Amino acid sequence: MKKIGAGLDFGNSNTTLALYDGEGIEYLKIDTALKKGSVMPSALYIHKNREFETGSRALLRYLEENTNRKIRLSEVEVGTIEVHMGEMDRDYFIERDRSFTARLHARIDKDQPGRLFRGLKMYLGESEDKRFKIFNKLFRLEALLNMMLRPVREHWEEKGLSLQSIHVGRPVRYQGSSDREGHQAVGRMKNALDLARFPEALFLEEPVAAAWSYLDDHRLKNSDTLLVFDFGGGTLDLALLKKNSQKGFQVLGCEGITRAGDWIDRELYRRYVFPLLGAGESIPYRKDDGTRSTYPFPFSDFEELLLNWQSTHLLNQSRYLEVLNKALLCEGEVGEKADRLNRLIRCNGSFTLIKLIEQAKKELSEKEKTAIVYPEINLELLLTRDHLNEAIKPFLTEIPELIDTLLERCGIEKVDRVVSTGGSSLIPGIRQTLEQRFPGAVEEWDPFRSIAAGLAMADYYS
Image 1 (cartoon, rainbow, N blue to C red):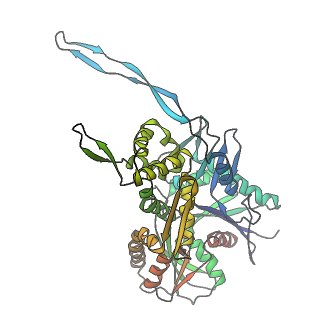
Image 2 (cartoon, one colour):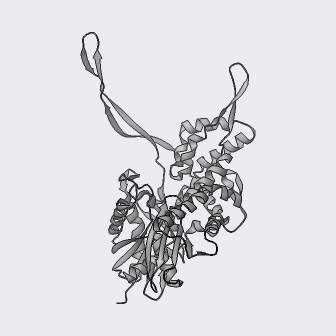
Image 3 (cartoon, one colour):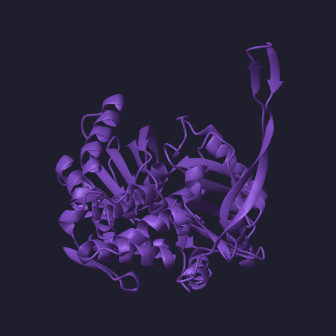
């Protein structure tokens, strides 16, 4: 049987599976909702009846079942806690027990038809063994990853393939991990792959995998140095390599940070959408002496639940709505912004808004301006390339510093070629920063599939 190498690029945003037979790469169409879906959104939707969907189909089902759904929160008892306190009678020096039982309650969305999960990869590096409560049942992270990975395995089995091994990508640094090597994160991912009945998995840094696919298609001279710049949704990863044979190379070092495209989306949300939802506004009121004054609208109370779209439904609680209702009574811009925020909460539209922001970011990679239009909440916002450049300013400072740190540690002064990959690497300001640092040496390389291809090649030659 002809040998086949397999590579799984399981990313924060997208997942890709590639096969390599020594001659060419094949990308399996693992996204069940699209006829040509070789790049699958890393999404999982679990329905109330325990059915689940992955990829684009998961996103479609979430939107169908949750957009404009009226949220009704119900208070339920989630447990009890025993409180023990001692009290000393000062007259008779007698210690008295003041113990009592307190009931703990939470407000939950009992009508919720299903739960959508995105970015599960970010939890791999957390120190705690996280549990996710889904319809009164606790799931470990590995169990959720198993649901996402199992359909991927079924795709290659439907083609009659029996894989003996697979290379899986990993970031240089895992989000939330204090362990630089990421042993705990790798262990959790291995457990998930085992549950999904994957073959034996070997892990390879994602920028190194991108180098595999690039060098298979491009030529460098022996001793030339190659810097891979992999800027995706969850992390920014660098790898510095030296060419040493026809297809061989030596990895000199890797470096990375645990912020990338998803962080930019949130920053665009904070900077340019929040002010249209009431951030920075003041509510007028009449004082006891009859004079008028204002107090700040407490938008900070809403921020994290808006950014974390999976928890936005919790804003339907009275402690948020009472504040919002006062703002809704205001005239002018304050009332308009409060109405926009109210509509966003009531229609459960935070996920849709995040996707619109992400799409606008992508369009600004090719155009000087674009618009975020969300008619259901009366939102129309013009975004320009300058707005995007303001949002990415922290990266424009941090990227050169990160590169210099890697080069200095490896004792390298000159880089002959820079390979730029990953969806966020297409942002013009990021490209310009690389080109200024390495004039004439930067080349874009298959931003969404290069890692999976390189992993499959590494698996084939291992």
